[in-house]
Image (tube, rainbow, N blue to C red; front, side, top):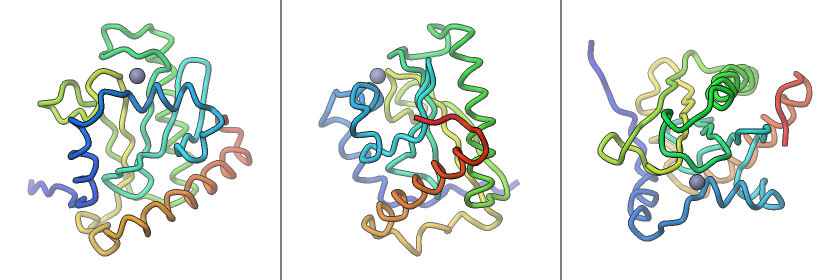
Length: 169
Ligand SMILES: [Zn+2]
Protein backbone atom coordinates (compact mmCIF):
# COMPACT_ATOMS: atom_id res chain seq x y z
CA UNK A 1 0.00 0.00 0.00
CA UNK A 2 1.33 3.40 -0.93
CA UNK A 3 2.08 5.61 2.05
CA UNK A 4 2.26 9.38 1.71
CA UNK A 5 3.27 11.75 4.46
CA UNK A 6 1.18 14.81 5.07
CA UNK A 7 2.98 17.92 3.87
CA UNK A 8 2.99 20.44 6.70
CA UNK A 9 5.57 23.14 5.92
CA UNK A 10 4.51 25.47 8.80
CA UNK A 11 5.77 22.83 11.23
CA UNK A 12 9.33 24.02 10.50
CA UNK A 13 8.76 26.85 13.01
CA UNK A 14 7.96 24.23 15.62
CA UNK A 15 10.88 21.98 14.73
CA UNK A 16 13.29 24.93 14.72
CA UNK A 17 12.02 25.93 18.16
CA UNK A 18 12.65 22.53 19.69
CA UNK A 19 16.21 23.20 20.78
CA UNK A 20 15.53 26.77 21.85
CA UNK A 21 13.36 25.99 24.84
CA UNK A 22 13.23 23.39 27.54
CA UNK A 23 9.82 24.53 28.69
CA UNK A 24 6.99 22.08 28.53
CA UNK A 25 4.07 23.85 26.83
CA UNK A 26 1.56 21.31 28.19
CA UNK A 27 2.56 22.08 31.80
CA UNK A 28 2.64 25.78 30.96
CA UNK A 29 -0.92 25.58 29.62
CA UNK A 30 -2.05 23.53 32.64
CA UNK A 31 -0.80 26.23 35.01
CA UNK A 32 -2.39 29.13 33.12
CA UNK A 33 -6.15 28.53 32.83
CA UNK A 34 -6.74 32.25 32.23
CA UNK A 35 -4.94 31.84 28.91
CA UNK A 36 -6.88 28.77 27.76
CA UNK A 37 -8.28 30.50 24.67
CA UNK A 38 -4.90 31.91 23.70
CA UNK A 39 -3.28 28.52 24.32
CA UNK A 40 -6.01 26.73 22.33
CA UNK A 41 -7.02 24.57 25.31
CA UNK A 42 -10.30 22.84 24.50
CA UNK A 43 -11.03 20.66 27.55
CA UNK A 44 -9.79 20.03 31.07
CA UNK A 45 -10.74 16.98 33.12
CA UNK A 46 -9.57 15.95 36.60
CA UNK A 47 -6.49 14.15 35.22
CA UNK A 48 -6.15 15.38 31.62
CA UNK A 49 -6.00 18.31 29.24
CA UNK A 50 -7.00 18.50 25.55
CA UNK A 51 -5.32 21.09 23.34
CA UNK A 52 -5.76 22.05 19.69
CA UNK A 53 -2.30 21.58 18.16
CA UNK A 54 -0.93 24.97 17.07
CA UNK A 55 1.29 23.15 14.56
CA UNK A 56 -1.20 20.68 13.11
CA UNK A 57 -0.57 17.84 10.70
CA UNK A 58 -4.11 18.40 9.53
CA UNK A 59 -7.13 20.54 10.33
CA UNK A 60 -8.49 19.74 13.81
CA UNK A 61 -5.35 17.99 15.13
CA UNK A 62 -5.86 17.55 18.92
CA UNK A 63 -3.41 16.63 21.67
CA UNK A 64 -4.59 14.70 24.73
CA UNK A 65 -2.26 14.63 27.73
CA UNK A 66 -2.34 13.67 31.39
CA UNK A 67 -2.04 16.61 33.78
CA UNK A 68 1.05 15.02 35.33
CA UNK A 69 4.39 15.59 33.59
CA UNK A 70 5.22 11.94 32.92
CA UNK A 71 7.19 10.61 29.91
CA UNK A 72 5.43 7.34 29.09
CA UNK A 73 2.63 4.91 29.80
CA UNK A 74 4.77 3.08 32.34
CA UNK A 75 4.41 6.08 34.64
CA UNK A 76 0.68 6.57 34.02
CA UNK A 77 -2.05 5.30 36.32
CA UNK A 78 -4.91 3.13 35.03
CA UNK A 79 -7.20 6.09 35.68
CA UNK A 80 -5.04 8.39 33.53
CA UNK A 81 -4.89 5.85 30.69
CA UNK A 82 -8.64 5.26 30.83
CA UNK A 83 -9.36 8.97 30.78
CA UNK A 84 -7.09 9.54 27.77
CA UNK A 85 -8.93 6.85 25.82
CA UNK A 86 -12.31 8.29 26.79
CA UNK A 87 -11.07 11.64 25.54
CA UNK A 88 -10.07 10.02 22.23
CA UNK A 89 -13.70 8.89 21.93
CA UNK A 90 -15.06 12.33 22.88
CA UNK A 91 -12.58 14.12 20.57
CA UNK A 92 -13.64 11.99 17.63
CA UNK A 93 -17.27 12.80 18.36
CA UNK A 94 -16.65 16.55 18.61
CA UNK A 95 -14.46 16.64 15.50
CA UNK A 96 -16.94 14.55 13.53
CA UNK A 97 -19.72 16.98 14.38
CA UNK A 98 -17.54 20.01 13.63
CA UNK A 99 -15.60 19.16 10.49
CA UNK A 100 -16.82 15.71 9.33
CA UNK A 101 -13.54 13.85 8.82
CA UNK A 102 -13.61 10.63 6.78
CA UNK A 103 -11.23 8.95 9.24
CA UNK A 104 -8.69 9.53 12.02
CA UNK A 105 -5.11 8.74 12.89
CA UNK A 106 -4.72 8.28 16.63
CA UNK A 107 -1.28 7.66 18.04
CA UNK A 108 1.63 8.30 20.32
CA UNK A 109 5.33 8.90 19.74
CA UNK A 110 7.83 7.92 22.40
CA UNK A 111 11.25 9.55 22.27
CA UNK A 112 12.58 12.18 19.90
CA UNK A 113 13.86 9.61 17.39
CA UNK A 114 10.27 8.40 17.05
CA UNK A 115 9.11 11.92 16.25
CA UNK A 116 7.97 13.07 19.67
CA UNK A 117 8.22 16.87 19.64
CA UNK A 118 7.81 16.93 23.41
CA UNK A 119 9.40 13.68 24.59
CA UNK A 120 9.05 14.29 28.34
CA UNK A 121 5.29 14.78 28.63
CA UNK A 122 3.11 11.90 27.51
CA UNK A 123 0.54 12.94 24.89
CA UNK A 124 -1.72 11.35 22.35
CA UNK A 125 -2.45 12.72 18.88
CA UNK A 126 -5.90 12.70 17.28
CA UNK A 127 -5.54 13.69 13.61
CA UNK A 128 -8.64 13.95 11.39
CA UNK A 129 -8.19 12.62 7.87
CA UNK A 130 -10.11 13.13 4.64
CA UNK A 131 -9.98 11.18 1.41
CA UNK A 132 -7.14 12.64 -0.67
CA UNK A 133 -5.93 14.95 2.11
CA UNK A 134 -2.21 14.35 1.66
CA UNK A 135 -2.06 17.80 0.11
CA UNK A 136 -5.00 19.17 2.04
CA UNK A 137 -3.21 21.97 3.87
CA UNK A 138 -0.67 22.87 1.20
CA UNK A 139 -3.08 25.40 -0.28
CA UNK A 140 -3.23 27.39 2.96
CA UNK A 141 0.25 27.19 4.42
CA UNK A 142 0.06 30.87 5.38
CA UNK A 143 0.34 30.71 9.19
CA UNK A 144 -1.99 33.69 9.70
CA UNK A 145 -4.73 31.84 7.86
CA UNK A 146 -4.10 28.79 10.02
CA UNK A 147 -4.11 30.58 13.39
CA UNK A 148 -7.33 32.35 12.41
CA UNK A 149 -8.96 29.05 11.53
CA UNK A 150 -7.62 27.47 14.75
CA UNK A 151 -9.39 30.09 16.87
CA UNK A 152 -12.62 29.62 14.93
CA UNK A 153 -12.39 25.84 15.19
CA UNK A 154 -11.75 26.07 18.96
CA UNK A 155 -14.93 28.11 19.39
CA UNK A 156 -16.88 25.70 17.21
CA UNK A 157 -15.66 22.68 19.20
CA UNK A 158 -16.48 24.37 22.51
CA UNK A 159 -20.01 25.10 21.32
CA UNK A 160 -20.46 21.49 20.15
CA UNK A 161 -19.09 20.24 23.51
CA UNK A 162 -21.76 22.28 25.32
CA UNK A 163 -24.57 21.02 23.09
CA UNK A 164 -23.54 17.36 23.27
CA UNK A 165 -22.56 17.08 26.93
CA UNK A 166 -18.88 16.53 26.13
CA UNK A 167 -16.06 17.64 28.46
CA UNK A 168 -15.44 21.36 28.99
CA UNK A 169 -12.97 23.67 30.69
ZN1 LIG B 1 4.82 18.78 31.12
